[in-house]
Length: 473
Figure 1 (cartoon, rainbow, N blue to C red):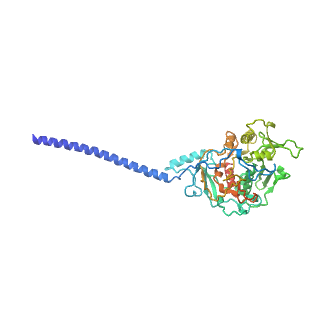
Figure 2: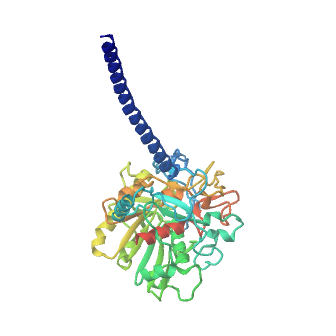
Figure 3: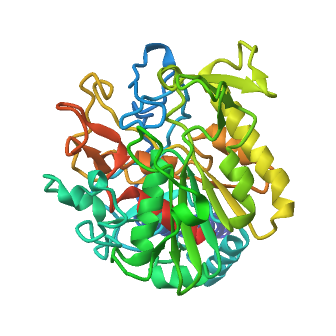
């Protein structure tokens, strides 16, 4: 009996031990499997993080567009151009910028994340093909093939004061960058190829001095900066461009390329309003500034254009209104609306007005592609143009190299074109990163101690504006 009971106890103990060993074995396997899964996931997560750029969002920079309460102005003759216009009251949205961490990305890099499977890549590419490119969102990348033309050689088209290679400036690293839109390609610009694409077409730039910079940039880009004899000046004959009495320059330029029957022109209209003398017999007359009426030049010549690029912005300030003797008019009579008399509201009203007019005209001109170019940012630091403001930085992308926000930083222009057939040429955000590209203290036209932090060196940033234009065409 003792032996049987002892055997029975040992049997129960052995069975209990086997069950416990079996349970512990199962738990051990599960724990090992769990550890393997966690370890694998950590490796994959670490590899995926390493393959992506380090992204930080900067705080808004100090370049917001201020309201006019404390703004000073430059008073000039009505027909002359403002060399250093003051900022007017446009409040810029927060600028989201990808911070430069260590070095600029290599040429041709983009911000589309890599996928771990071919199926994911194909799906992403398919989605990008279907979406229209947002050319204002992307990054600046180094490109040693730049610039697109010589700052020494493009003398026929390029104003001497904007050719920074002809000044005492010694650093030209700002010329060596290309804009890369996110998720889409922007073809390299080639002058002969572009002219062939624009065969039998007319490209018109209408706006202020920043529009004139874009025009001169396009002339240099299309010709490669070469003074070719087969480009004909047709401004006076074809468009009646003349130099008004007392003006520094003509009210427009137009050049014809006989080989492709292409015309590229520029017309001066700093506010995109129709300006008419109130008393034509009075040499000291004031001018009606029709906020709801496009310039007569546009109304009379719109049928001749295939591409139209409009811009305005920096001439909307009270000082220019007074010095140019402009009086706001609406519906053919002086404006009596006090709210609309505010400069920033008048400017916004005018942009919406001309875009609406263009949108109504587009059905009658089915081949016309019209663009509203957004505001070119100024970079005056520690003062205004006439109070010691400067833009001495020579370090490219010292404030970041990429724009990550989807919306434009010029809400007025963006809002005006939304829902219309007029397209947005969005250059504000990408230009805001390039404060080293201004003419700065090397201007040959400014008074001593005054820096030009509004206009750009050419070759330079306006070349990119034209590249985006060409891509959108």
